[in-house]
Image 1 (cartoon, rainbow, N blue to C red):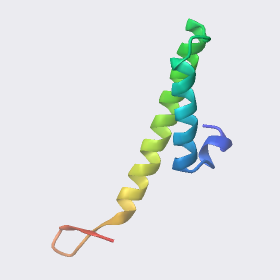
Image 2: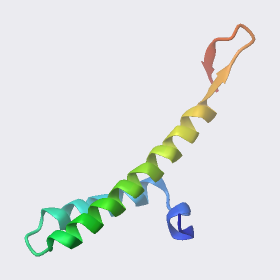
Image 3: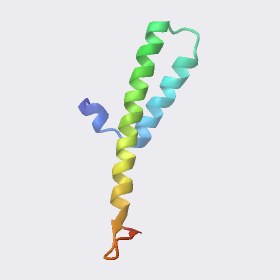
Image 4: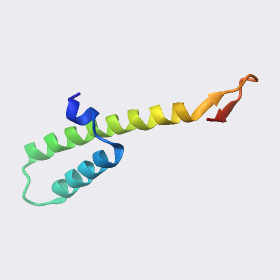
Length: 71
């Protein structure tokens, strides 16, 4: 993954995804370009999911009884 992607906030990544969706909805994109934009969007979604998972794991903590509690 590129450094540019890794330094993006989740909000910035979602803005890029929104732009990609608008481009895919447009009529001026070729089929090949749409496949490429789709693949880039899926990669960006995986990145966002990874970031969100990290935050969720940091927010939960196992207590001494083995139960999860918020951090």
